[in-house]
Length: 636
Image 1: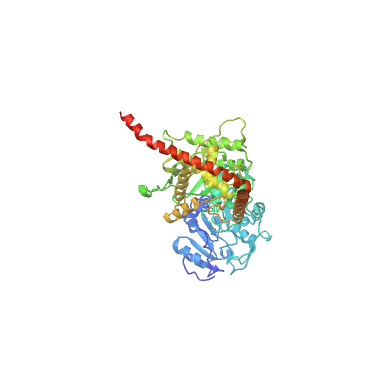
Image 2 (image 1 turned 60 degrees about the horizontal axis):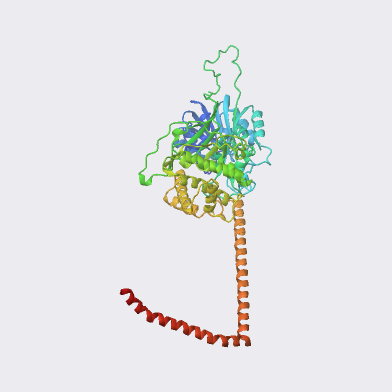
């Protein structure tokens, strides 16, 4: 064994001296992954972090005795200097054979545990090694990347290319030594002597997920408005940071509604447990604490067990928001204390702010209004569109004050934050004529000042119109409308009369709200305003560099150019026909002016024309002479 360089760093051999694994994206506080790890770790438990993890996750485990197994010497040295944890730098063979842990967390996957400086043991070998150090009754949290998940479907680079420095080996479905789906992973866990437990789908990327969703919930509630909004928000890129083949948010929502939200997730986080002894050995008294000697401490089970959803959203001060299962449905929950945001000066106050205190009630059930409207547009169901949009406008009107202004969460209730709370498999086609019932999905975001009702309505309709136009969705209205014009048409469908000035004010409000949600500075806010004001039907969606969407935008531009070209051709043909008719008229006139009959008629008409001209002059002189006399008579 190599001589220790620190009292808290062990070097059993196999360390990688010039390599670092902590180069990826980091979330504030470790994100949902750190929240899950903290939830499955009881106080005082012995925890093994196998592989590189976000330092924020290590901080969340301050209530436990943490040992980190890393292959990178720079990462291990930095971690030991900054945090009071024990670090083992080397391959999995460096773990002491006589030491067990209550919780083993391999949230970076098993590939990041094995060192290239040691003897490779393969995926199954690594799993067996980690299972061997798991105490009876202990918990294993394991990450598994989906080889046919959403990330690989939208990535422009093929998975088998392996151009990154870390890809000295490329794993995929062709490798029979590793599981390729959830069922195979559960079989491998059972083969290692573990009992498979729950599973969480990681979106939008397994390395730094901003949303963890229970796989059973994804299968049981494919039409949930909450899951629809969460997956769309997690996979929708805020900026065009990297090119993709198609819109990952659209693909994630489609997978959810098809019942494939878990099967096509970018990655999974699996829970497994080592069975504890069923009864104490003969002659050994039962443990009064309910824990066998040497077994792991179990975390206190809350109502409904683990949450069904963790999502990283909003400012870092709030952190991760949970959704728990209760007897009356799903409920919001913000774990831990939340620091109140300091009030900014009026001149710099954001247009929207978040109140985490309201995230304690029930999550409204129903389908997301945006999804139902998209379905009605694709089916060209004008009756359903009129019913839904008219009901949405009436619902906003019912929450307005006497001055026609909206406050609180209703002022920001756009179509992607409103659910049809009356349920039903197809509420858009309700034959009873009952008005739809709406509810705000996430009521924590609130407007800082009251908003005019028309601005709130125009903002929600403008966002939907921009989605229709730039996303290339089929709809029952003219394709020549711009986004503002389509917004006015949607307002007319809702029974409201909006002008373009109101739509412009709604775009400015959207800029202010988006800047508050993302925490943008002045420069980014100006750039966002320029982008949103320049949205055109022939352009791709803002912030999305998608090959599919770029091709759709090119097709729309080609159709628009074809229409304009046809219009120019028709105009040229009309001008040409008018010019030919004018030339024919000129030729006829010239022909007639040179004939004998024209000359004789002109000679006959000339004296009459002169006589008429002379009569007009005599009449004018007579009027001038009689005018003074009439004036004198009127004075007398």
